[in-house]
Length: 429
Image (cartoon, rainbow, N blue to C red; front, side):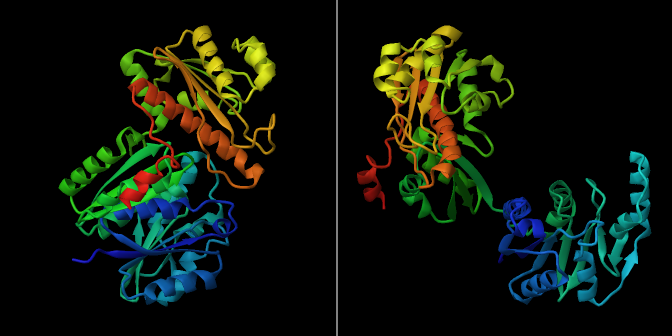
């Protein structure tokens, strides 16, 4: 049986001009995929009646579209035009729904505010349309039939849209052919390397892989025709990627590191230069991190690396602050001063300008622990614009530092970088 296919239309000028990222389409796509519904197309249009009408007509013109879902344009203001457009397309009038009006009045009374006449626009419903309950807000969703197919209209407020999708839309569209899906998270290896290593998994029957990169991380989403196929694919991916995989689903790298430390009764302290506190903030972003995180020293100025962390002044004078041995001394210093099992340190050039003749993107990460002291110098892929590079350098440095700590705790070697991996990649492609 062919899967149910849906077209998405998201409405809002704020989406077109970039004031708001279209997170609704992403959430709906994921939710629909989980129940075996295919999204055949997703479009964004402005708030004009002409744009909304054109988008809905285009969606209905596609023979393989079983349903259309619209988000946005159901609020109380004059630029919320979706309900008016749908009524016109259906050739019916808008009618005041007494139950919605009653709920709006009760909601206003509960919050102790007057119900403005404009708010009653949300009680206007195209004649014959079904009202979809909105347990998270004021504007209800709507369901009507156009061109023989259901059209769902939902509010643009994300948590309201999600509530109506979960309660009303997904149960109706559920094809009963939901695929099995799992997302594995990796760090420190480029997307092209991950993909080449997983060539044999790509060839497995009933398996589809998607690669979702972010700075210094890649999510590998596995979609399979059933749970048994998914389990076999996951096992194969883990075998091929080894310790590059650090988590599943929403598990962050910081969470993985904290779990390892806590399980071993160990701790970490950080010394930061170019990241300015981001590394410590990431480590403390998870609940229970106080059991493993001792603290941090943000030694941004060069002289503080000596006075606070004990980096030898002669080393700083000879090599400057951006140096692998300086990173090692910072890590050893913060470990000793804060009494941690591991000391983790970062120094480098975030940009937009070079420092001490070192180019933007030069990063050294030092670690000090029971097995000794060492440093790594990750290769960071960067845009040519130094201004845009700065936040990327800082984010990637945090990821690489946490990944180094994770490997150190596990006592395993890190995967070779992409240049050294060239021969292996050619053998896998």
